[in-house]
Image (cartoon, rainbow, N blue to C red; front, side, top):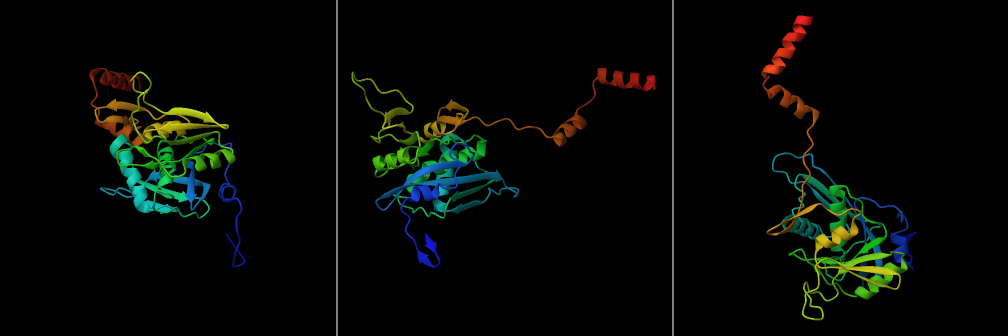
Length: 265
């Protein structure tokens, strides 16, 4: 931080980056990530806005970022579309890391905030708020899996210190399928571990992590390629309704009613 042209040290960067955040409000398009810069872990706020694009035809929409790599955002959007049917076509996507924080491209810094970016953009797209008591850590893989990050315990401790009661992380083992005693496989889905006043939700894939972070779960259906987002039905506008009425032929009953009205007049 600079003041009067001089660099001023910040003793608590997490509190500095979250100083303007409303802790008790579940907000759309806002997710907290715990990143690692050097040997210091800190919490940062990732905000996203998804809006209909003004372009037409084959225009796919703009991708504007501040604080993360543009290629990283494109990778996350591609994974969401390919693996879970969450499409951002014809929509502009804006992502900003609050406070001017610049997250690097490596897995130690930028990659660990992938999950928070995915949560924020999906929340803004579907209009479901993100839980304000939850922080997110994880790198998104091309198969839709959550990959382990460096210094996970240090990040969990920082989230606990900042007052978060839940944190969504990759599975600690980094393996998708494990066996319990007796040779049986552990059930799919997030696994909860509570320690030191914070609940850790360990997820194998991005969709499970998104459902843990949002106030309401995404509506999905099971397909051969995996779970896919159920797209809401398009609401018809007044113009669409009027066009349908013009194109709809009159049947016998409607003609009789019109004739009766003319006779009455």
